[in-house]
Length: 228
Image 1 (tube, rainbow, N blue to C red):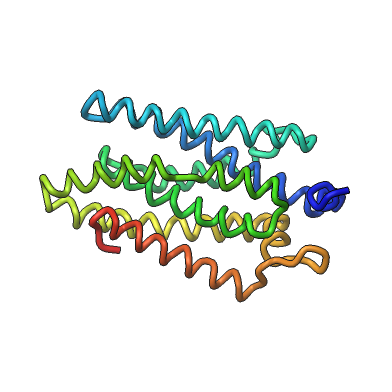
Image 2 (image 1 turned 180 degrees about the vertical axis):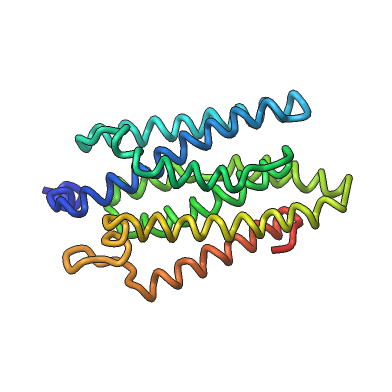
């Protein structure tokens, strides 16, 4: 029995991975729906097409995660359900008022979530880690958002202050949401803090993790030309 198969004989570990994949699967589905909606508000056909392409990628990731949940013998609907309310509440609290705010939210909010999943992926089996890293790859997202926001600020420099304030609000909401989800699900806590059989990052490591996530958020803001 290889390492991946052996770890899944532990019911606690299996439940933690199903929760992890469930929250990520709903996050990808939610991102698809938001991007598809934002595409309708895009000011040009080129922007509409770009957002539609990003939405399609998010849905492809959702399908891959859904298929993996089925392979593990889990019901994708049930695996995602516990995370619908908290994630929807986050999106309701951070509803953008303009198209540019929507882009910043997509880049900042999804970037923070992706950083969180990357950190946790260090403590799962190689197969699950590979799937997570593929799902949170934000290369295409970064290229489009950075170019669009920078161009908008170059045309109207006054946008930088408003979008910077929006980005700072987003990071506070996103970090609080991530902490709440991790604390509310015992499986997440077990996976991150660790057990004797499967060591995690520990409580000190969790504090350091959120510090690294905040630093990467600051870097993303600067890349857009915004103050963190």
